[in-house]
Amino acid sequence: MTLEPRLLEALATVQDPELRRPITELGMVESAFLTDGTAQVKVLLTIAACPMRSTIEADVTAALSTLPGVREVDLTLGVMSPEQRAELRESLVSRSIPFSDPASLTRVIAIASGKGGVGKSTLTANLACAMAADGLRVGLIDADVHGFSIPGLLGIPEATPTRVDEMILPPVAHGVKVISIGMFVPDNKPVIWRGPMLHRALEQFLTDVHFGDLDVLLLDLPPGTGDIAISVSQLLPGSELVVVTTPQAAAAQVAERAGSVAVQTGQKVVGVIENMSAMVMPDGSTLEVFGSGGGAELAGRLELVLGTKVPLLGQVPLDPLLRSGGDAGVPLVLSHPSSIAATSIVAMARALTHRPRGLAGMKLGVTPR
Image (cartoon, rainbow, N blue to C red; front, side, top):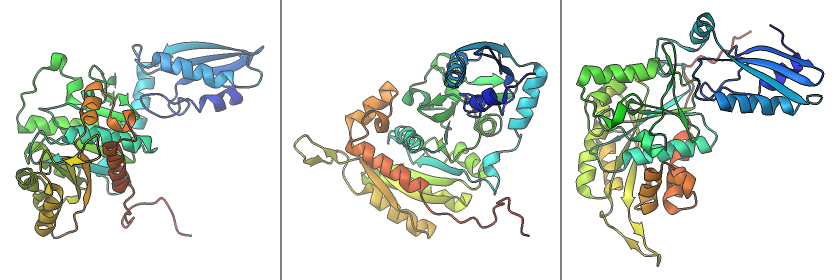
């Protein structure tokens, strides 16, 4: 293997689009040398049918073309051998759940609701995109196995994860790494599974899918207090809950059950989001289509039940653009960032990710002298 240091330095700026790590760290650069102004490079793809082949080719060419003395780039794309893939997989994957490690610095936030139809998945997709746009490394698990909708909301309904032997690389949408059972089910077929299979599916998402280092992992939970909610508390004991409701009192009463499950699971409810709040009319007036006060009422009820402070993170006004953005696969925070609903969601995303937290009990990699 021939590696020219100057070329290697430039190639270190190229990231694998799926693994989100430099191709030099992943052992993908087989050779790189400069001859008479031509940079001759061979890069090994993880699999022959790599879906990001053209992206890697373009990024490598762009990185090398900026170097002084390089007039032409001669790039050859090869494929890793089974032994090289096994070595890569060993360096990346652990059969344990990295986010359940007490030393993990990844915030794990599950978005819950008492019932369907309150816009939980739409809000989850928008929160994830807002966090990613803020520069955070974000992962999103569509844990609503029976009612999966996240791929469509993020504009990747036909996305297929890349498999490197037993390791799964999640597709990336709007800067968010995403995995959903919908990516494995053909033709929008229903998933008819009982509890143990649901638990196993979530466990595989957490162990076999390589998210890499994340600042935040969001989970879009199914509505209610069923099997998945229990599995999340078992597999991710340090996870936190955000409960979504709509303004009407009836919705708040149902949503209280989704938050109260934290009494049994030991999770922390970090806030309530009121969706479909008062709609702002063209003349500036507001129309309370679904009533008012449900979010504040729910936060107050959960404080009494849980004995801890549960803030109302915000109220998202009813906005047709929020719905149309989901239908188009471009979340509102990206398509109309200055809208009232989008600014409200961005503020809530920042409130969730900028909360202070202690480092007690965490390994910091520091040895006293």
